[in-house]
Length: 241
Ligand SMILES: [Zn+2]
Image (cartoon, rainbow, N blue to C red; front, side):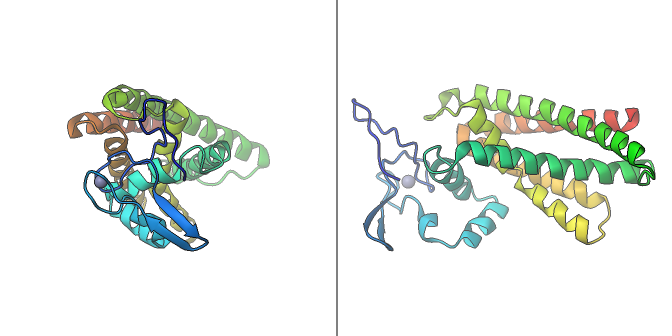
């Protein structure tokens, strides 16, 4: 996590202080393997990114608690294009996102229409292709609104994310979908899906707020619009299929 500077001396590392969001050139200095010193933020004088020395579980807990500093660490300091295999991470995230959403749609369809598993391979493939097409369509609508809306909001922000980065941010901030996996093991009422959806909306909102520094109302509007359109298209597709 070394610094890069423009010819005019401004910071291009993209790193930010997780406490206040102030840009910082470098997050730590390494003296020897395992011996590092965290840099302090020039603005708030706190350690710029305490998560570098924390256990990963602390980051997970802070993300679940919706702490903006955890989201800043993730989007500005951890998932920089230089620090990770960006393309690989993006494709894996999209795949996991779609698989979990297919499972979600499957459960919803079973509950809505007392739908049972198809008996033949052909009918199974036919039903699966309908669910897959529905999930892809509703997520194209959802992601297009989120990315376009975020793109509009981030114009005043210090760092402008590209659409691929925004796509990854939206997907990563929808991490509450992972809890759908618990429904594959234990039986839960379908209302749990809507509780998970609420957490995803709130997590997407915090992510938008952190990366755009925009007003709460604007971020909330983009999130609610994207999720609202996804919900409407999902309901419509359940009825049609
Ligand atoms: Zn700071």
